[in-house]
Image (cartoon, rainbow, N blue to C red; front, side, top):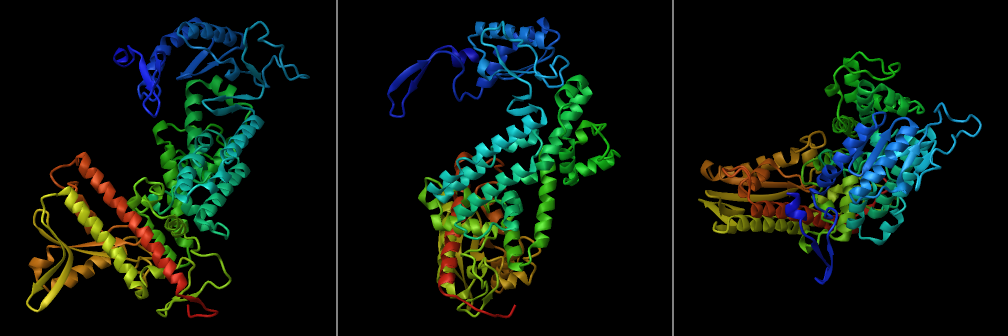
Length: 594
C-alpha cells in the first residue's frame, strides 16, 4: 500500500492550476495513512533503542519521543536516537528537546539547585530544565511549572478574541465554539484545573459571546450554563472549562491507577513534586458518576492516596463523567428558571436539529444562511438573554392586550397581531417540504392547498401527495411558550406543544370520517425547530430511513439534510421578524397583572 501511494513523486499545483514543484520525500500532507506509515517507519528504530538501552523507558507517539531513566543513560539513548533518525532522513530538533532533571534529584546542589552541565560534551544538546517539561503538550513537573504552563496556555488561547468583532456573528460563533473554546480542553483533561485561570478564561469567552449577540447587559448565570450544555440538553455545546473538572478527575484517576499498577517508580518520579490530588478530588465530589464508583468501592475520598479501584473498567470515561455532570447542571437549571415561558423555550430547545442554524451562520448557500440580525436573535433566544437592551421596566403591553413579563418576548412568536408573518413562516415550511418530496420522489403526484370535501364539510390540506399511498399533510408552527401549551405542561415536559397540536389537527379532520383522518399527517414544528413525532416519521419515510432501504443513498441523505437546514434557517429568520415587529408595536408599562 505504501508503494502504491508513495512510489512516485507527487505534483503540487497552485489554486490557479499552475505547477509549483514535485513532492518526492516524506509522507504526503493530509494523507490519512501518513501517521501510520510514519509510526511503522520509526518503530524498528525505537525497538532497537529500547533493547540497546535497557535502563531507559522509551515511549513515543509519532514524532514525540519520551526517554525516562538515569541521566547518563538517557543522554546516551538521546544521541543514539539522533544518529539513527538521521539514517532515516529525520532530524532531532534539539531546540524542542528537553532534559528534565527534577529538583528532588539526589545530585542536585542544594545551593545552586542545579547539577554540573551534563550536556557540555554534546553537539546541539537538548535544553536542560529543573522545573518540568511538556509531554504531548501536557506539562509535567513542579507545581509552579504546571501552573505557569496552564496559565500561559489559557491566556494565549484568548489573544484573538478582540479580532472576532470584525467578523460576522455566524463566523465568530463557529470560531469561538470549534477553535478558541476547545483549545484548552485537552490541557485541562490532563492537568489540574486552576480555578482562577479557568474562570478568567470562561469570563472572557462569555464576554465574547455577549459581543457576538450584541447584548449590552451582563451575561447571566443561567446563560453560562446553557452555553456549556450540549445541544441535546438545549445548550450551545460551548463548554465552560469550570464545569470540566470531573473530566479532569476521571483522566487523572485512570492514569494514576494505570501507572501505579504497572510501574510505581515512574509514577512516583513524575508525581512526587506535585500536590494536585486535592484539586482532582474536588472534581470527583462534583461528579455523581465518579462519586458512585468511589462509594461502590468503599473508598474514602479524603484519605485514599491512590484511589485504588479493583477493576479499571468501573472508572467512568471522560464522556461518562461529563454526561453525568451535564445532567446535574440541566436539572439544577430547569429547577432554577423562575419564568415558565423561559422553561418552556429551554425544554423545547433540547432536541436534535434545533441548533442547525448555528452552524449555518457562514453557509455559502444563501437560502441556508440566517441573516446577521436573525443569527443574533437566535443566539439570544437560545441563551435566554434579553432580546433588547436591559431597561428598568421589563413588562410590556402588546397591542393584542397581552402582558409580557419576560425579557425574551416569546409571546411574539404566536401573537394574533402577527398573523401575516405567521402565514409567511408557515408557507416557508410548506415550500421546503414540497421541495423535499419532489426531489426525493420525482415521479410522485403532489398538490398544494388541496381541498377535501365530504358533503358540506371542507378541509384544506397544505399538501396532498402519493407516498406511495395518498397522504394529506397539514403543516403548523407552534410556540412552546404560548399560554395554551404551558397550561398543558410545556414548561415541565419537552415535546408537549407538538403532541397537543398533532391531536388537534387529527381532530380537525376526524369529522370527515376515519378513512380520510387516517391519511392525515400533522406536520408540526415548534418555533425552536423541534419537530413533532409524526413530522419526523414523515421525513424519515420520504428519505427511506424507516422503509426497506435501511441506508439511504447519498442523494436522499443530502436532500434530508438540506431540508432540515432550510427549516432551521427559515424559523430563525421568521422568529426575528416577529420579534422585531413585536418590539415596534408594544409599550412598556409601569404596573401590570402577573
